[in-house]
Length: 187
Image 1 (cartoon, rainbow, N blue to C red):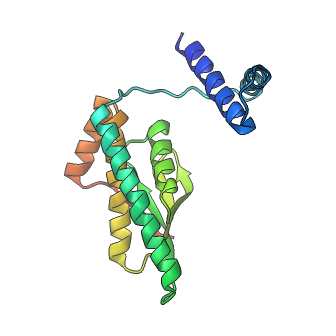
Image 2 (image 1 turned 90 degrees about the vertical axis):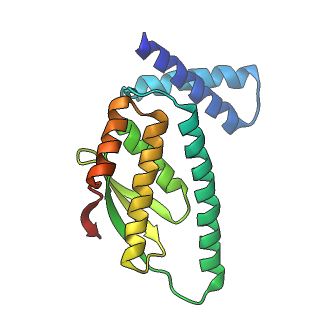
Image 3 (image 1 turned 30 degrees about the horizontal axis):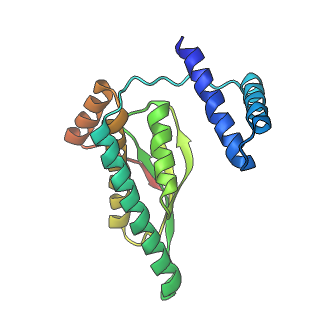
């Protein structure tokens, strides 16, 4: 039953994207989108994604507010660096180990990190739960530590917004034990 529901949701989502890409709402576009969506899902079946958590409105609101704040701050910092022109910014690729290793949480963290200007996921080790992040404007070791802490804080907010009780327990244990954030330093 869940698999059928997921398939219907995927067809609806793909059809909506199809119609948005065409920019026209008509019966032809709707039927064409449904047919293309079903064909895509038949040729490229989606792997099952397990969601053991539950949605927490307060946590989702915290994630959204902090994400929007990060967008504004990072965009301002990039603009200042670009238009200031007084110094050459340095970048680095950092390894950050996450506490929760589910595919869903890895993907959500990776997407959120990549959407904020100045950072981009360049690789991911699913088995170890490590994100390799390209970071813009890193000048001191303290900047590296701050960025790793920011990624771990983002993971915590996401897990508290959509995670299961067991995943929240993992986050709490990592916070009290000192999270294993560093994997081999920066590249």
